[in-house]
Every structure is written in structure tokens, then in C-alpha cells.
Length: 376
Length: 254
Ligand SMILES: Nc1ncnc2c1ncn2[C@@H]1O[C@H](COP(=O)(O)OP(=O)(O)OP(=O)(O)O)[C@@H](O)[C@H]1O
Ligand SMILES: [Mg+2]
Image (cartoon, rainbow over all chains, first blue to last red; front, side, top):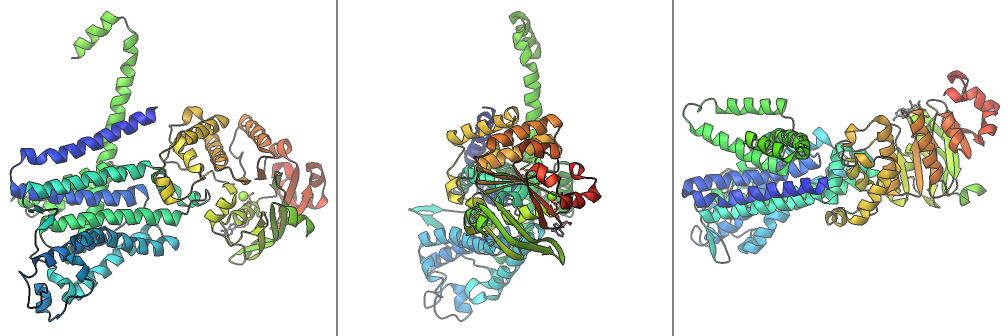
């Protein structure tokens, strides 16, 4: 029953994290900071997405930002149409379309008049994109570095298409001047606790859902695939299907993160599908510990937090990238399992030490008590 | 051939070559349901390759493999496994980062669907079966241990237990006792004798003592072909078998 004890502790730890992030606005009344922290939480969600595919199934996705960007554009399209007819031309078109001489709303924009559609699309479009890409890669047994390169290449392609199709996507400028996100009569101002709560709540839900997936038999099979893919097939599991599944789930989560990012940042831009962001996610997850969902989330919070602090401080204005790079190298060299791995090691050490103390229970009562008093 | 139509597994004129090198050529092999067949032969005879062909790891370049009357040589690995064929590899291959318990749960692959397994969290019937198997191979105390920390013999047993968890009609065992101590080998022979009849077994083995303990029919392979078939006494007195083993110091030392 050691196992249930361990998984109960894990659940408790995840729960504590969720409660902690949900409590932050009670102690913080600074709209600017809340907005910044919302952004960090979105990054944490992106890290959880990568931890699922990389940490649990061994699929290194260097293009995680692709699906993040697709989600953010879905939200931006809906919010842009929400501004019509304020920022609009004669025919109720978004402003940038008018500037680009588009005369009529493109067919794929039309359904985004419905926020419900946009919310679904923001998750399903990235998931479908990943499933399709995964279908080609995993049916063809492309693994490891080659799969990583393909994800990177796919991102560059999507990015170029978005920049190129300026008439429909806003091109380099992205989609700006958005309406406020509103759902069921609630408005989410990016600089308010409501948006922070929205992000924190979604992150909590994603964390717990992902935890459930990793604990299911499917999650276990994914870890077996990470460990030794070729062996898993001979038990009758369709390895490609399992990988496509986790790849798509990871993409759906990244899409949700992208939608939230648009709400927090109040725009969508091709940089959201950029190589720098995508590689940053890999760093966050490596630092936090890729085989721990919570570790990955905390890794994202720490790295982006430190990065934010360093880049804002005057002394480190020039050198913060160097410092971050150095920190990353140190972590990878000395903590191969990241912060989560180090934490587990400490916990195991602590447990062993407290287990070693158990025999003192069998000592005479008086002695045990004085022992206890001495310790405190 | 008449015998093949009744057999559970039949290889007919199976060949494979690797970049010009013919590893298996014109191999015919028929195994009946419930039989325990030993497959022996000198190093490089093509025994492992023959098992690879049956379980779909390697594709045949010619010939046909039928299992329970249906051709399987064009099925995918997981389809062959689902049809009821399990494989133990020559180099023991288990999931080293997972615990023994988790390994066994993966072995229990009666449900193979992604979504079916998404709502499974190790039910009690699974747990009972896992514990029964762990006891069978003497790993009860190691259930929560990562497989990476097992000894070589224990790893072999874990892989055998994985196959039993899978519960296939036909089990392919590639050198199950390699690296085991004499006592461990003896226990393995006992285990195989108990499996006799419940599963069809094809056992590739170099340890002739072990073969003697378990063998009914023995098939001898040499240079990718079936050289002889019969009881231990029959094949070991066969002149061609003696010649085949000449280079490797006799049948007992191969
Ligand atoms: N993938 C491969 N590519 C090239 N040659 C191969 C490959 N697999 C096997 N061979 C060759 O085919 C021959 C048969 O190999 P196989 O492993 O089947 O022999 P074996 O009977 O299992 O021998 P052992 O008793 O040493 O395990 C060997 O000469 C081997 O070098
Ligand atoms: Mg071999």
C-alpha cells in the first residue's frame, strides 16, 4: 500500500499548488503584477503540455508553440470580430482586412462570430493539427531527433503562412485591438483579478486532468513507450495510436494556453509561434523536470519569473540572457531530472532518515519522550 | 503439406535476407497446439531470425507464415500479438524505468485501446493477477522496485512473467535461461513444464541440460534451414546434426 500512499501525497502536492495559485489575488492588489503573473501561469500550462508529450511519452516537440499560436489566433479572431463595428470598415470587416482591400469576410472567419465555436476551435484545431502531423510521423515510425526536427519545421511553415497571408491573418502585426473576452455576462479585463482567476483555474484543471491521464493505464503505456517503444508493440498495443493521442492532447492543452495568452496579452502575433518561445518551453520543462507535470509548471514559473526580474533590473540589462543560459547548463549537468528530481531525492532522503528513527518507538517510553524533547 | 493444415503455427518455405546475406532460406516448420518445441542450432543458424519473422519484427522476403489457419506474415506487430503470439527476446527487454508491478500491468494487454485504458486505473482483478504472477516467478518482494534494479536472472523472469500476463496462445522464448544460475535454470524448467499444454511454446535454447529437462520434439536449424527434427536422442545421433555442430565443439557446447 506504499503505492497509494505515494500517489496520495502526489495528489496533495498538486492540490496545494492549485490552491496556492488561486489564493494569490487575495494578497496582491496590483493589476500590473496580476497581469504579469497570469502570463507566467499561461507559460506553466504550456510547460505541462510539453511534459506530457516529452516527459511521459518521449516525444520531444520543438514546435510546441505552433499549437499555442493556433489557439491564440482562434481566440484573437473571435475577439476581433467582437470589436466590429468599432474598429471596422464599411462592411463590418476587421480593420486590417479593410487596409488590405479585402471586401468580404473570409469563410473561415465567419464561424468565429460565435465565441462557443472559437473556444472549441482553439482546442480542437491545434489537436487536429497535431494528430495529423503525428499520424504522418508515428505511422512512419519517425522518432527522436527526426521527430523533433519535423515539429520544428512544421512550426516554421505555419509561421510563414500566417505572415504571408496578411490579408486574412494580419501578417507580421498579428491581430490587435481586440474586444474584451466575455462569457456568460462576465467580462475579463486583462489587468484584473478576474483574468488571473480564469488562467489559474484553467491551469489547475489542466494539471489535475493531466495527472489523471498519467496515472491511467494509458499513461503507464505511454511511459513504457518512452522507455522501450519497440517492446510495447509485441504486447498488442498500437504504439502509433498512443503517441498520436498524447501528442494531440498536449496540443489541445497548448491551444488552451494560447487562447488564454491572447486574453492576457490582448493581441495575437506570429511571434507566438516562434522558435524562441518554443525553445524556451523546452528549457522550462528541462529545468523543472520533464517527468513531473508539476515540476514542469514550476520550472516555467521560476525561469520566466527570474528572466522577468533580471531583464527588468538595470544591473543585468546586458547579461541576463547569459545568466539564464548558464543556469540552464548547470541544471542540465547536475540535475538531469530537474527541480522535481532534486525534490524527490530530498524527500526520499528525509523519509529514509525518519524511517531509520522508527526503532526508537520500541525504546522505553520515558527515554523516547526525553529524546523527542531534546530534538525539539 | 498435410501436417501443416492441422498445425497451430506453420512456416512454409520462409526466407529472409539482409542486404544479400540469406539468414533464413526455405524454412519449413510446423508446431501443434499445446506443444513445447525446442529450437536449437549453432550460433548464427537463424533461430532468433525465425522468431523475429513469426512475431513480425522482421518481414519475410518469401514464403508464408500461418497461425491458426490464417496468414500472419503481413500483419503489423501489434496485430500479430493480438492474434495470440507473445515473444521473449534474447536480450531481456523489460521497461527499466517502471516498477515490476507496472511492467506486469502493461503485460496484461487484454484491452489495447487508448480510450479503454484511459479509464483504467489498475482494477483489483488486475492487481490479483499481477501479484499471482509475481509470486510465480519469485518477484513478490520486488513489486515496487524499478525493473532497472533487478538482477539478470530476475529480469529474465520478469520478462517471462510479462508474457504470461499477456497470456498468448503461442509463446516464443529466445534463450530464456541465458545468464541464469543453475538453480534458476532448474526453476525455469519446472515453470515451463507447468506451462506445457496450456500454451504452445517454442523455446530457443543453447543449454542442452535445460533442453533435456523440457524437450518433447526438437527442431535443429543450420544455415537458415531446418536440418533435423525429432526427439533428443534422434537428433543428437543424426550425422548431419553432428557435422553442423562440428565447428562449435559438439551439440552440448554450442
Ligand atoms: N538485422 C540483421 N542484419 C544483418 N544480418 C543479420 C541481422 N539479423 C541477423 N543477421 C545475421 O543472420 C544470421 C542469423 O542470425 P540469428 O540471430 O538468427 O542467429 P541465432 O541462431 O539466433 O544465433 P545465436 O545462437 O548466436 O543467437 C547471423 O549470421 C546474423 O549475423
Ligand atoms: Mg539468437
